[in-house]
Amino acid sequence: MKIFIYSRKSVYTGKGKSIDNQIGMCREYISSKIPDNDNAEISIYEDEGFSAKNTDRPQFQKMLFDLKQDKPDYVICYRLDRISRNVSDFSSFVEELNNLDISFVCIKEEFDTSTPMGKAMMYIASVFAQLERETIAERVRDNMLMLARTGRWLGGTTPTGFTSEKTQEVILDGKIKTAYKLKDNPKELKIIDCIFEKFLELRSLSGVSKHLIKQDIKSRTGKYYSLLGIKDILQNPVYCIADETAREYFTSCNSDVCFERKDCSKRYGLLAYNKRDYRKKNAPRQSMDKWIIAIGKHKGRISGKKWVSVQNILKDNIPTGTKPAVMHNDYALLSGLITCKQCQSRMFAKRRSSKGHNQTAFDYICSNKLRGGTALCNCKNLNGMQADDLVCEHLCNFAKPSYKFYHLLEELKCKLQAQEQDDPIADIDKKIDHYTKEIDHLINILSQGAASPSVVKKVNLKVSALDDNIASLKTEKTAREQELSLTSEQELQIDMLSTTLASFNDHFDILTIQEKRTLIKLIVKKIVWDGTALHIFIDGD
Image (cartoon, rainbow, N blue to C red; front, side):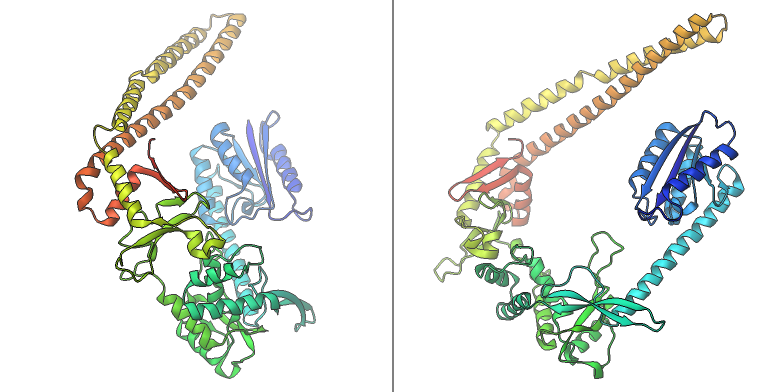
């Protein structure tokens, strides 16, 4: 008999029903309630420091894997919510056990899925477990929102320009509650002023970035501000003064504004809560109608009029169908496809600003240089029109049927096809079939009941050895099947590359620039500019 015991505790502590206590009670249950347990093989799975909101726990996942391999008779836990408080997760778990014909026992609730009533009660209890979890989560959210409306800083990484400091407030029942508020960081706030002023002047995130890099202004982590970091600062209401303009703006965005017009102040700044959805992966930014806007306890920095102007500029700069982003231009063939060898960043096209006769001239410049100038990368710019022409000419020659690359592809394809003709799987299947028949024959001898104990022992040993051979052959078969699958995939890739090369010369001139880019991506692995020469790496070279 095999029995799995699972235990879980949300935090590392010895209080209450600790991991050891849970395991001890499960062992007592096995001794007193499960018949024929004297020789039971018991496996223990312990998750300490993990909540039951999902099943992403190392020992629980290991147990799920072992269930399919070892197929125990019972899975036992102290209480239902040790497994999960999510009905969907719990239902899937119970269904998996039912499919494997494994009984599930919760000793606290005295549920046993080996009986119909136990199974029904288990599902009912799991519903209440999830309800309890959602009720707790809702209370926590409500409390957080209530605190947010007071203008307190609720913790976490403070915005650039601020640190946090503790304050103490006495609440109604006489208990002292520790709270936090934002405190000015004068050195960082000067950077904030610079970012807002430069953006209003240049109306460009990259322009602000270049200015900061030229002035050697870095973030608190010691790195230059990224474009996304600058944008987050410009969009953060924490710097906005809580005046009437700011209130009208957030009201028009359907945000939950927690102060009246009479409460507007030209001194204090705003705090925005519920900006991100932390229930989802990577905590995506929520739309502004879900934000809660309150007056903070810190000084405001940027007037509502200026802050709203910044938001409007940012909105106008968002690429649309009628105004594509610069990197998606309609004149440069290799924009974003070339890598700068010096700084390893991608290179993008930029029109030349000279007032000469050629208004179509452009260069490829690496993104670091575009962002911060030569302070970040001093690699020489690449003449755009010349680069496009040279790459197209090279690929046209490369795509000619007489080019040696075609012969190399054909040779590689022939080798792969030869490997497929040598069918090792058929030989493995023959051996498995042979060993299986031999085992059947030996078992048939034992079933006749005339064999002596010594013969029975030898036969058992022989059957065991044959089983091991079959298991080894099945493992080898799986590996061979994966190899053949990879070979077939490689053949398909070779065919696609050959077809693409053949299409290059025939249709290239009539394609749009977007279609040409797609075709080049199918052939070219990468293109590298080292400042003096352009290196083209063909996929398969």
